[in-house]
Image (cartoon, rainbow, N blue to C red; front, side, top):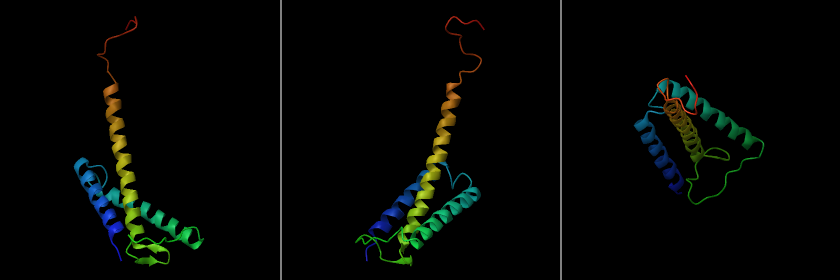
Length: 122
């Protein structure tokens, strides 16, 4: 039994927590809203996985880097941590991108004080 993959996932989740904390992007911006969104996303992905397993689409592969522990047939424990990370990184990228776009839009607008160019008259 190896915990390499799980350890990498936990390390990545810790890094995401530090990034989120530093820039207040998701959990550290509004924890109540984040809990709802993150919980909903995780639930949807777990149901998606369960449906894929039930229809025979998803199978647990053998890997020497996984713990071998399963929450259900064909669903390794690492899957929950991966989906947790996937939802979190998606929301951090989304909120970070929105913050960057908002900043860029605010700096692109020169305002009413800008000089008129191209021979136009005010």
